[in-house]
Every structure is written in C-alpha cells, then in structure tokens.
Length: 217
Image 1 (tube, helix red, strand yellow):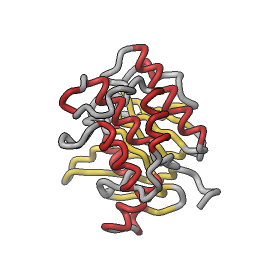
Image 2 (cartoon, rainbow, N blue to C red):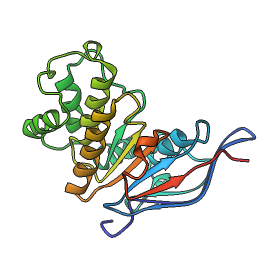
Image 3 (tube, rainbow, N blue to C red):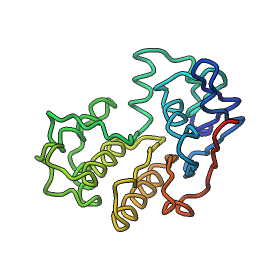
C-alpha cells in the first residue's frame, strides 16, 4: 500500500436520476503532495470529496484511496478504513455539542484506534490559537474558532490523507494563513497527502498544484 498514490480516480461520475452532478475522467494525487480542487459553486466539489471519503457511492467509476479500492469496502470496514487513514474537515464542522473542544478532538484519536496523545492535542491547540478553549463547548465558540477545532480534529491522529472542504471560508486572512500552513506542515510531517476543496481565491498558489472542476454540460 505504501507505494500506491494517495488518490487515483478513473471515469468517476455521480448522478441524481438522469442529472449528472459530477463527471471526472481522471484525478491523481501522490503521497506527500498537496492539491486544491477549485471550481464554481454547483460544480460538485463537495460531492467529489464525499466520494473520495467513501461517504457516498459513485454512479460509475473507480476510486482508489491509498491503494484501497473503496467499492470493496462496506459498513464497519469502510468506517474503520476512513477513521484510521483519512482526516476530514467538513464545511459544516460537525462538532458534537455535548462535548468540550478537548473531548471533540480526543474522540477523533479514539475513533481512529490510536493511542490518545494529549501532547499532540496541546501542540495543535497552540498552533491554531486554541489554547485556553479546551473546556469550552462548541456553542461558546465563534465560527472561526469552531473551524480551527475541526482542523485540529482532522489532524490529531496523523492521517495519511487529509481532505478539507472549504477550511478557510470562515477565517480572516491571518487565520487563513495559519490554517493552510498547519494543514500543509502537518501533512508533510507524516508524508500525508492533502486535498483542499475550495472556492476561496486566497488558496490559489498555496498548494503544490490545482485541479479545476467545472459544472457538467
């Protein structure tokens, strides 16, 4: 598995009935490489990320993640693969409201079935200007703070592939620079690939390369 690309997609299509939402002939992302997926609203960027994460199934095509063909995985096996190998930052952060910031992030380590490392969490919190917010509930955070917690949660188990859906949309310029730098540096530190889905023009030129999407004709 270690010599395989992080992402290898061929003839990928997703449709609702007769309406094709997304159609991609090929997309490839090497391990250790970073890429921005850029395109206008409605072109299927978030759908593409959800397909790569195995959250939805394609209408056609092949998706290989870290050498594993996703169509071969089902149920708990797919959940386990995702939890252990992929870090996700969702556009809607999906922080659990009953848990504190610290508990939300530690939960990601537990779900990935890796040893809980409080030092790793503290390091991320310091890097993302979250120190002092450990015992806050998500409802007590600003949108930008919640987004940074979501980034910390995606990185805490040192995944091999990090995928982020609009990770800078709620951030000012300073925190955008900080979040992109942390995403890149954390991925590079463990040789992970990084894919960022965005329409934020500030992301252009900040990653190794870009993959342009357009609405299907």
